[in-house]
Length: 426
Image (cartoon, rainbow, N blue to C red; front, side):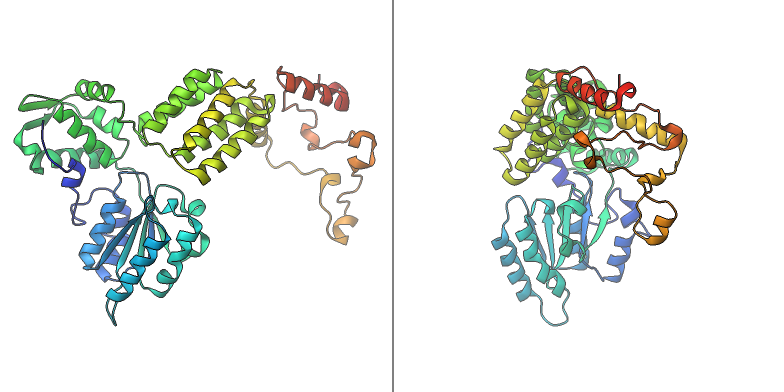
């Protein structure tokens, strides 16, 4: 086993753009960040991309190449007080005609509104150049005033060629790995489970190497798979296993197995999955797999998402568990899922059919004279708040799209539709 205090990913972290791998659209010869560095004129921006693609590394390289003071905060552990302390320090460092220090905030999407508000003045006045890193869509997670002061640059998962080069570079240059003779008989498994994540790739490589007793190691797919199976804590939050386990959770809910659902939920939680990602999947399942068989499922799942956003871990695990168990135990219907699919297929087949005249809006006198809205019957003027009139375009007026299923709740819906629409719903 190789003994070292730093993980491999940290030991071989790139220090220059020439050593940096991937993101050629940003740091290649014509990349916008490369041009910024060459001009030494840099403005605040946010790096948006999945884990392990070089957001933190890129920020450090920029600060080093520009010879700027570099302050870093983690949104997980820092509050408004920490932000203000860093800004105060930056104000002291910035004297006349000197470039602004760089403030790097990792996981900036985890900052609350008040924490983000505390950055506005410093970014606006140029006290600091803000570089934020996020795995979440900035449009949803970053307040508009701060987002308007920053450019957003998207980082992509690393391609296989970049990952292969990184493997070769690691075994050839890392001081600890060079104590052994390491070669690659196969790389497919490492590349597959890395999922475009350089840090994940290097963690797996180090795990596989440390598990071998020999001085000469030839890495194979079988060797990688064996070590990953024996180390379930290596949950892949962003590669294939991430989607496999999320899929297992949803299929267990769809299959009405609460034991399996809460097991796969626990796997995701133990692996460090973002609780908001899990909650989003539960919201989708509530509509796709339960739907009108139990409309309360969507209400609970939506409340779950709101709650985990406000509460955070570790307490959110209880909220997620309650929701997953409720969904798995609920009656199932995919009628809403099938209906929208059928409707979209019909739209693609028939094109932009005209809206019947009596359903059109008529905000002007001319439109009223042209017959817009003419003949429309207001349902609330009729007994039971229903009147039998046409709502679909003429050419598809007889099409059935929604088909209620046989759950008790949908049987009631079917009875109501049959009473209203007679022969159409039978």
